[in-house]
Length: 356
Image 1 (cartoon, rainbow, N blue to C red):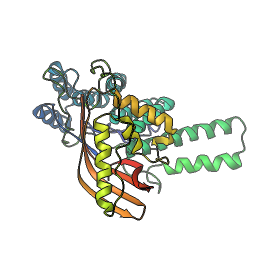
Image 2 (image 1 turned 180 degrees about the horizontal axis):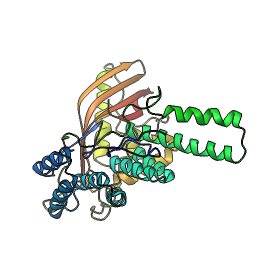
Image 3 (image 1 turned 90 degrees about the vertical axis):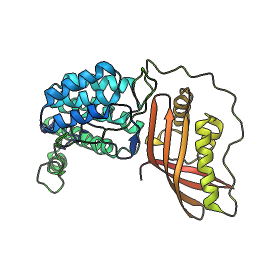
């Protein structure tokens, strides 16, 4: 059966996914820090030495001072899994997804735990949430593919039991099993990847206040209530294209970031082309409503772009840059790629991805 990117050292054949290690394995985002580095280093050393029980004790001690710290709580869930306490780990990761819904990593590890218990529908739902949170999250996409492969295997087996045509079903079932048999050509070489065998640099998470813990997501219970939206300019802040396309493209990106920072939804949404490739192919209105709720739900937002590189070709352009995002309890710095298209005299966003 498919292998899962995992934080445990081994899984039963029903486990499909790859779990993340004791620190968030982020491919594109780097967080700015508030957890005590010495504590994290000590926990990593204990995990490297195979002393999970002592590592859990250390994490719980640190959590007494910072009970809402997402990094420490993520570590706790990883260690609980390694100690063979899946239900405790499920509780830890579930709580993280409730309080920090913009973090994709807890959803991924929660999905693996559900899959290892045979609850593939729950695993699928968790991975879809991870992907909705970060559409460029390759680990979650791969895991979701493995989940679908497992569900297909179950469906084909059931169809055979119910008298379905073995001439059509058996080849499909055999193909799926061969894909995920260790040692086969299609098998993933990283099956049951051990976790925390060496220290990993913890993600950095910016503090909210002296008494609050760092977070990469707005907590559901303590986030400040957003002020009533102020009137926004009707005219989009997307600059017109002139004789210097690279400069105008950069200005378009800066205007998009400025509209996002000021929560000017008219200008922000006007920065996107009508054919914008929405995450998961959501209807444009659904995507706009979700963006409006998420942006206007923040009490403050700061979006800055730097290290911009542009590559244009006629009416299309690709822009890569570093995006520094700071909002309420969330502080991230990540690579971003925008694909723009010239519509009339304006550069508009046709596709948006994290990473690259």
